[in-house]
Image (cartoon, rainbow, N blue to C red; front, side, top):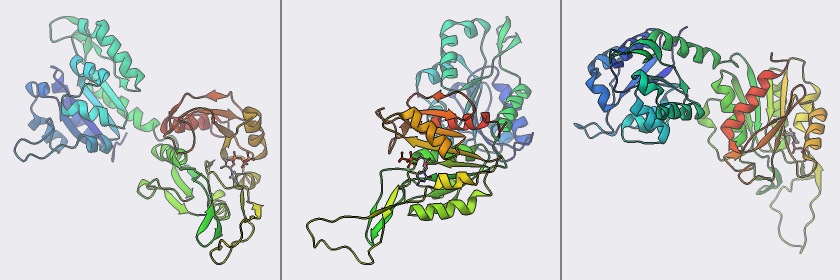
Length: 402
Ligand code: CTP
């Protein structure tokens, strides 16, 4: 597989297997990947940075700052740059640090700040590899979502024979290729996400709106994009930065504008996710001038807004998927299921209104996902990015998709 355009951080730690990281670098570069290497201090005893920088065609980093220039090596930037972080070889010491949040070198600081998936290829003596402390640390790392590339068996540097050899570079490459091929499972799909609140004008300076931040919609849009989809975002006024994400962006204000923008796109979309908190009512008339406070009371005449999800649901084609959200304060499940029927959703995501930290404005959410075809899925209180992944997983299980 071609890894062209893929950005890989390769962490090299102190182990006799460090020489194999040169082979791995060469394989990755040959496949088209950009490889940035970070070495731990003890790795420098096993292989020179010159070898690795020549093979990777980039400078190799091992210190928080360059001693000559005083320039800081930005570990946060390195972590954000990468699509994948591989630590090969991963020594018992580094594994212990990563599992316990220790951060005394550039490599461990980069690990803690990286947002991309992480793979580790442990390398050590067989008894070290089986030691309960190492096993516990590896289990911990697995629970963080890191992929452990099991050590292989064979002759070890100690002269003993058993499991502890770093996975062969060709086998690591195979895992990397598999990672990138399954990670683009929405490639070629077009996804519409409505997000944020709508604003319904009263006069030239005032409007009716709600507290939606658009964060859940942004998490879903990013999740689809990271899996290869072409993402179209119809967004109400939000303060989250959407411009830098590379979506097709359609900023709107009112429910009517959101409807118009979404219906133009609808026929071309494979998947539509309605996360917007659309205002249900709008002032019947918009005053042409600022309303003056002349009377002691003011009554507003409101009229029902168009229900975007309902209207587009009427035109849903058999190969299209619609995902809706529901916010209920009573008879939650029954109301959510009724919304799924009424609006022709394939999935409906019920927001919890009772959980501290869930819903509007928060970075976390707790949801129940109802499917037309599958069982109910209940989440814990999780970052919205993790909830977005759960929703994508449920989309993949739908018969249209399968
Ligand atoms: N929705 C929409 N257009 C509207 C209202 C809602 O597209 N005018 C979408 C929302 O984006 C969400 C779903 O419909 O995916 C349900 O929204 P919700 O506000 O829970 O339900 P309503 O239909 O507004 O019903 P009610 O407020 O009476 O519960």
